[in-house]
Image 1 (cartoon, rainbow, N blue to C red):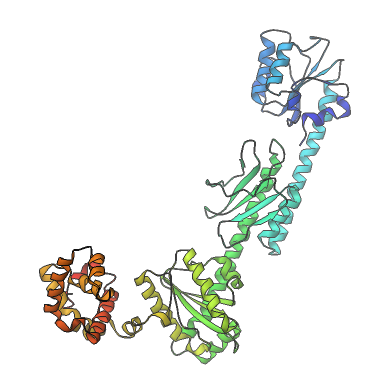
Image 2 (image 1 turned 90 degrees about the horizontal axis):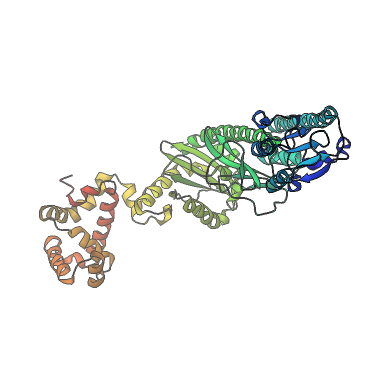
Length: 517
């Protein structure tokens, strides 16, 4: 990128002197043009260094129009041959140029404009050719890296090596690490709020060029290139755009490989989770999972299609003790089988897994750890049961071993739980509640939860003590006075848990008796 200062260093400009606008010495020169007409700026695009004999500079009306037009259009500067029309630049024009950092140069003797424009434009054309060659080399290296499947980091490094300026790649998935090459003058810029599908300068003056990596219309990452000069070279825009396209291709390639890997995992895991699993399927899974006496498999269930980050699936070691992850979509749910080595690392692994699930706002049910592949079909049921209770209780992570009485409810058919537990214990209460529109079920629940404390139960229900006493007398009438004793109390607590669990999906049914439903 040639500037006015660079032009002055060329042999053909030997003898030229500064007249005004020296602060604009770093203005970029894109072309050298000869012009005299007062409205010359109407035919310019910006970045031109104008060669002039100063024909109209001495005119008090045409001179300001000529120079002012060049300033407005963004010309690089003005070079005047003194002597034929003006012997010096008028002070008013010099002040105008200084005010806008617009370079004005002067030759005190006649010069050949043809030689000046030919020499400088030849250099500019050669510079343009070198830039195109650099872009061609960049594109070739990017394609070679894609063919060798070297990954995103290699693509970003190629951009850094080509431009010799700091670059930063920041994926939107927080688990995937950023890639930074070179030293930034300031902290690595955060992803801007707006999405920029095209290269966009950041800051004023710009300190970085930013472009979003778009895949099927969605941003998946951000790529930054540090800007060292006041003006951004066109080469920088094109190089960033080429690299972003290559990164998007790599992203799609990796997505396709991940999809194939997930399909292969599903083909290995599906037969093992069937009951009973075939011996051949067990052997294939054990070989793929590299199971050993010191390894275990933890099966978990998610309530949605796959939402575990790609980075974790590609690099299971991000979870301590995890050596392999198998994924199996099941309708709206997803089963994951984590191979954990050694078995004693299971607690640390579960803590990391729970933190990951909580961080992403998910819910997960976990089965008991299995060391025999032949029992994984049981683990799948346990994981789904744990997930059901976790969703019911609003928990992010729940182990099957922590389900307590819910294991009993899940082991029986819902109608059997209703018939054997809920109806005998709560049926009369639900019927009375529905007829008289009194929240006796909530009252019973509050008293049981607060271990019989009337003060805490009244506070939980947000009612006065006299109202609570009235409801307790009604409970005595409907349930019998023994509902507060040990064995009956325990049975009622289990019946309440079962009722809430069975009817969690239909709150409007809570005030009806099982027979009415």
